[in-house]
Image 1 (cartoon, helix red, strand yellow):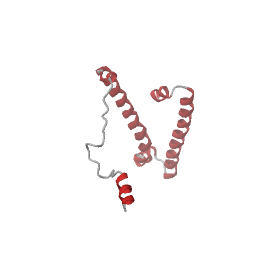
Image 2 (spheres, helix red, strand yellow):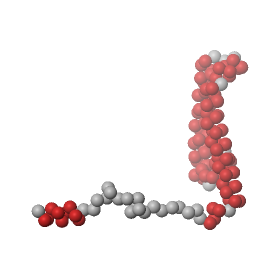
Image 3 (cartoon, helix red, strand yellow):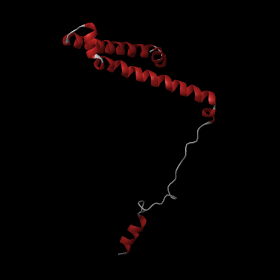
Image 4 (tube, helix red, strand yellow):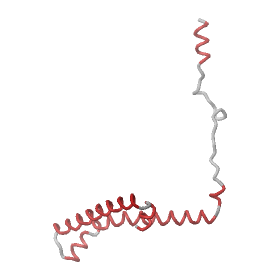
Length: 115
């Protein structure tokens, strides 16, 4: 009977840990991140990439969204409109492959910046 008491006393009860017993660490920003010039540059870079990201998805969705207007303006039928959408997607695919090869050859950030 004493051996069962000693076994239960040796196993710690981790489910009853209080908040004071758990340690928390806070991340303090480094001194180099405190400069306003770097903060302004980082915000400008972020805004640039957000605009590029927006334009990337805008160009992918512009053909299907405006398909009826494109068909009316150029007086094309459904099959030619479908061909137009397919050619656009295939062109996007081919340029993605070229961009992947260029990013392996040159620095990837240079390829991204040049668009």
